[in-house]
Length: 146
Image (cartoon, rainbow, N blue to C red; front, side, top):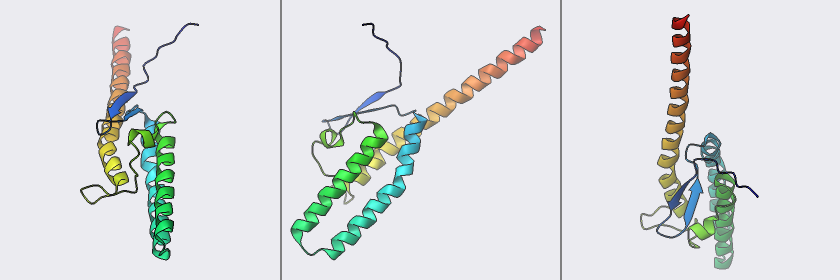
């Protein structure tokens, strides 16, 4: 069987010296999915807050946190692709957990990814703009040669 190698723009990011996250930061579909997921994450947060306020049972509270973690990791896998297992990438750390900075781990992750995706989107736009400019230059040159 022959192998076909194409440049998909996929880059690798080692997370906290452990797992590896793979994605193309300049993929407009990824950018769209990532920022569109904000509403879903807010919904999950609201559901978790409401459910934990109703539950006085510690075991039930832990189960809610585990469910929240699973939902967010599944959402991230939908955004970044099935090959990215966020439980493995984060070495089992729950996204519902709180970091040393007082923010939820999911918030820290999203804040770390946002500038990478923005830079990728800017790179994509610059590439499109450069291609359009080159096309215009070629058209001008062709008209000048007539």
